[in-house]
Image (cartoon, rainbow, N blue to C red; front, side, top):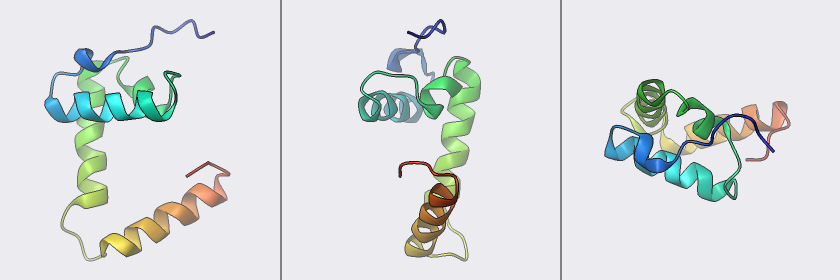
Length: 82
């Protein structure tokens, strides 16, 4: 059991933040994941959610497929379930 209070989606100050936090909690079956941990400080969580959204889905020289391949490679190197 964690001693850090798990943030709930309504603690995010933006709709995007609430969606990201809700999805993170759902994926982790209510347990604290990386995204949920960022929302222990709601302003930071919202800013990180926007940065992640831009990095993954914003206009860049890389295609979505290339970004997904890089994310998979990094997750594998970190032994992270992706």
